[in-house]
Image 1 (cartoon, helix red, strand yellow):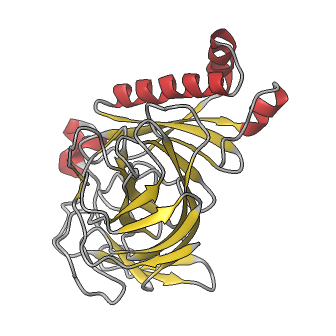
Image 2 (cartoon, rainbow, N blue to C red; image 1 turned 135 degrees about the vertical axis):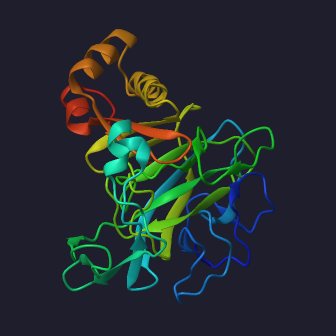
Image 3 (cartoon, one colour; image 1 turned 90 degrees about the vertical axis):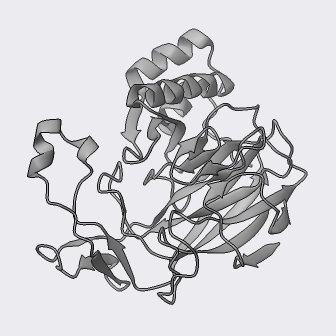
Length: 309
C-alpha cells in the first residue's frame, strides 16, 4: 500500500514520540520534509530550525531486536532552489589555518535547480557563481533509540540520525537496529547536493518529498546501521572522535561478512584487501564513517551479496 504523509508537527529530537502514521511492513510512504531551517516547499518557515524531522512512522509487527529496512525509492524537490553557507567549519582545517577561512556572513548562498540539465547553479552572492551536479540525498533519518531517549537531530548514533552521508540516496536500502515497538521512523534535512563530510555545515538545503519503502528485514540483530545499493554493502559508525566511528563501522562490516557466509578469518582477510572508507558528517557532535565493500568481490568469493527484503 502507498501512503502520503504530510506532518502536522515536526520533531527536533528522535525518540519515542506519539505515532503519526502506522504502516504495514512492505508499505511505501511519500513523506513531505521541510529543510534544516524548517522551511517548506512554499518558502515558509513552518517550524523552528534545527533539522526538524517528519514522523514518527510506526511499522506494524516490528519489535525491539528486529531490523528495519528503509529503501529510498524517490527523492523529489519541493522547491526549485536551496541554500548553503559560504564557508568551512573550523574543525576540518588545521587550527592555525582557521584565521584564513572566510567568515561566514549572516546571509545564505542560494542555488537554483535546473531540472533540464540536472544541475545546481549558485547565484554568486558570495563569490563566483558556480555549477554543480544535482545529487539529492537526505541528511538526517533513523529510528527511535532505546530506553526512552529523545536525542537531538544535530547528532547521530546506532539508531541513525544526522549522518549526512551522501551515498544514502535513491536506490539504496538502509538497515537500522530496532529498539522500540514499531521502530518509529523519522526523516528530514533534505539536500539537493552535498560533498562528503558536510564540511561547510550544510549541503544545498531544501524541502524535499521522500518516497521510502519500510519493511522488516530478514537479518539477524545488528549493532550499527548497514546499507546496500546496486554495487556495494555498507556498515556505518557514528561517534566522536573519528577513529571511534571508524572502529564501529569496521566491526559492523566484519559481523556482516560473517552473515554473508564468511568465517571470521576469511572476513578479516577479505576486508583488509577490499574495503573502502567514506566520511559522512564531520561537522556535528558525532562523526560518521562508512565502511563499504563491492558486491562483485563477495560474489567472486561465493558469499551472499544482498539482504534486501
